[in-house]
Structures are given as structure tokens and as C-alpha cells.
Length: 120
Image (cartoon, rainbow, N blue to C red; front, side, top):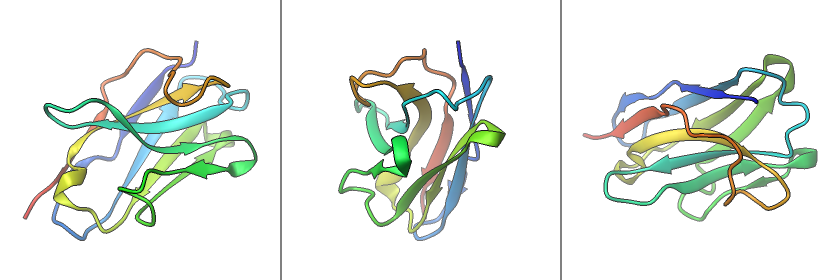
């Protein structure tokens, strides 16, 4: 089974940017969808970006226009470009795969994630 390792998090000030990377242990060519999720302390894990066949993407209103998800099949990686970061973006960010059931049903066990902290 494919496993994912997240990286690229850090401590930034509001308004700054980060680019997160998620590297898969195997090919992602056959994966239907890839998503970035985040979990803040005391909150449920939530989807923040998804990429589907033909490059279709989905974003919740909270990040729309600020976050961009992309993937590079040759590099077995999915990325999350986060611009104009806000304190409420502070969370541990995870990537995962999903199938036709949708992004609410991730198919792989969760990894360690990468911490993003936005603070002034």
C-alpha cells in the first residue's frame, strides 16, 4: 500500500507563505484523488484541498483563493501552496488518498503530518 510522508511545515507570520510536500512511497498514478487535511488542537480533521482526475480541485471557502493543491506524478508527490496564511490556518497538515467514495473516506492510515504555525 502507498504511504505518505508530509514535510514543509514551519512557523510563519500572518500573510506569509508555505509550500507543503507529500511524498508517496509508491506510484500515485493510479490514485483517484489526493487530499490535504488539517487538524487543529481541539478540532476535527478537515479537508482543505483535494485534487481529482483531470486536475479538478476542490477547496473549502476558508482557504479558497489562498491555497493551491497540485501533484507531480513523476515525483510521486502532491503539494500544497499556502499563501496569505492566517492564524486560523495553524494545524497539523496531512495528506491522504481517496477513491470514488470521496475525500471524506481516506484510504490510508494517517502519517505524522507536518506542523504549520501562523503567529505574530
